[in-house]
Image 1 (cartoon, rainbow, N blue to C red):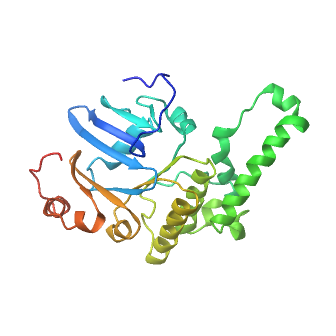
Image 2: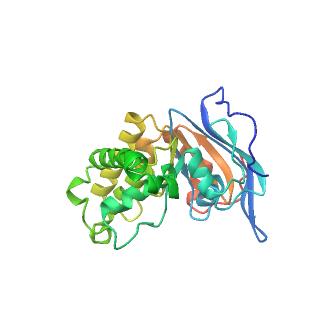
Image 3: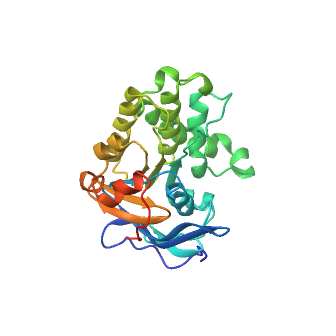
Length: 272
């Protein structure tokens, strides 16, 4: 299905900022996702969990346009975005971080974060020619947003450091800051705590909660650490073998026998 322009977006009556309906995705003969239904509401941190290979990142890639679904529909902020290219999805207001760090080595923390403003920039010959009247004003706005996020993420002491010399926890914080300066309507975090020690995980969890609460920002969190998921998410959706097998309140979902079997290698369950 193509993400073509249509009628003006109308927010969902139930407050869902993101709605995935019957999402299916195949790679060759392998079904990575099968008829997955999924929602994120405006006031939620929703965790997407499951064993390795369960389809979590495939679903995120479908939402963000990297691998559009072959079947199903993705609605965001009241508009159909199924099949939109990644930069168009970003322009609609979805920002994401990646499972593997996607920072630019050889550049400072500040410059990496500034790159997150690119979707709001409108470069061109006219703006360049009129820099002092037009482009300079826009640059001031971009810088103001970036500086505010640097303060919010407590990155001021390392703002001029090359990003590659920072410890993993701070590099992850830089990537989160780069997503936040895009001023998204939905933040998607793909395993933001991979490789972190306990102190770094607590540091990241605090900033996710602060971003959600202070910026009224819905969050979709893909994460393996169930202690973190239980601690910060409002709702959990569990995938296994590309199918949704459970959904609900975190402490109830993680004790569901079907979920326990999935994490211990059980098979033979149907899609929810």
